[in-house]
Amino acid sequence: MPEDKPASDFRYATGEARVPWAAVGEHLGHEDLMRLVEFLARPEAGQEEEYDRRLTEVQAALGKLSEVSGPATKLSLGDNVSKLAAEARELLGCKYACFVTNATAGFEMALQYANVGPGDEVIVPGITFIATMMYPLQSGAKVVFADVDPNTINIDPADVERKITDRTKAIIPVYIGGYPPEMDALMEIAEANDIMVLADAAHAFGGSYKGRAAGTVAHFGAYSFHEVKNINALGEGGIVVTDEDFGKYFPQMRFLGVDMSQQIPNWLYDVIAPPGKYGPVVPGNHSATEIQAVCLSGQMARLGEVIEERRANAEYLNERFAEVEGIIPCPLDTEDKKSTYHLYLLRIDHEVIGQDVQVFRQKMDARGVTQIPHFAPLYHFRICRDLGYDTEAIAKSCPNVEMVFNHQFTHLPLYPLSSEQLEYMADAVIDAVEEMKAGK
Ligand SMILES: *Cc1c(COP(=O)(O)O)cnc(C)c1O
Image 1 (tube, helix red, strand yellow):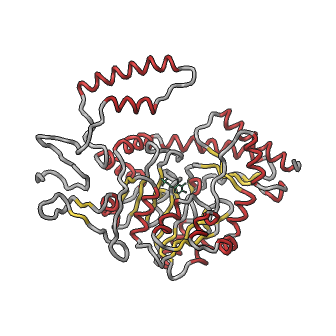
Image 2 (image 1 turned 90 degrees about the vertical axis):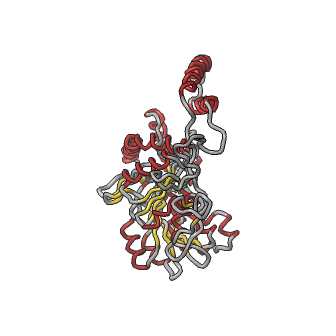
Image 3 (image 1 turned 60 degrees about the vertical axis):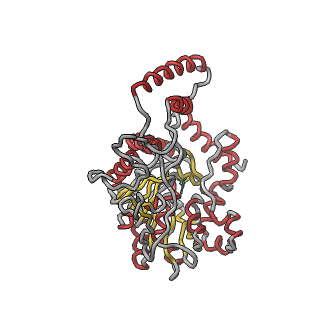
């Protein structure tokens, strides 16, 4: 390796060479690019003929471009992946950031740092997406479900404190819908008990808590760029962040422990087990691609506008619902808490209305507003019974989870809806609730 070439964790970083292959694989040609164009820019209904005409023009232009252009030099873990991580560090104000396949991979890397495994306990909120509990279960640890605050559906620090034992290794608060949990209280409990806090900030990229970026007010945080999130990395992607020294090993945690800064004799690299909190850990493969990084970097540049539009939509819904008895509107930003408005938290007061949220969902369905429920209590899924959890006892220990899930809450989408669609949705909610109050 030439002196002036920096050490790298990237495979096949061949640099300036006489025979400059990018990787040992087929190049992406302009025919492949054409397929991508066709996939990403699809014909509008009724515009098929015009679409075909313009597509032919694009094809000719791409063919011409290919006469004077070479292929992308790297497709996985290249300069764009590095650049994206630098942009994320800048935006979030954190020390280490790493772009990975998805948020779940980031959770895995963070929990490996705490050497979570059999005999350990990990506390998660009773309601969240299943990804939050999967690595703890996979590792052989026991998952302990904490109750939630009905006003935000976020984890209740007082219940976390009650459920800590001397086996608790990690707490995973979730920013449900993008709204910050009580991070100060949780961090205090964690410090007092030497427990690692991993923020599941899958919904919260761009939000903040007391002036600090959501997800960075914890030992580790991870964000999701899956296609349903506010911004996405061509369908899948995640960023994991930390200020802990372990962040130095993110590249090895992402890619099989490969360390290009050291070599065994007669070979290109060494492979290491990075030092976790209590001992060495074995990395997996969570590599992300250059194309994903390019896409996400573009979306990151528009993040402010994206959140602004969603905030305006949430404010509109709150105004519409303010007058309606029995609808509890979504918590909005405060001085300390800035949401990303990934989802609109809608609660109904089932005691005022006389019926519960399950009836409400059917009524919304009948009005064509479907796919609104988010999320179910995790211990209701069969996996917990399969693994021998006493799910009835867990339900009793999470009274707010049961109450909000059975009677009160759902989430409405806030993604770019036209004002007519948003108005239709608000009308549908109000109609449904008025019908329920009238006993229909
Ligand atoms: C989407 C989501 C995840 C998982 O994100 P991936 O990038 O798909 O791994 C984790 N937690 C919550 C709350 C989510 O909604």
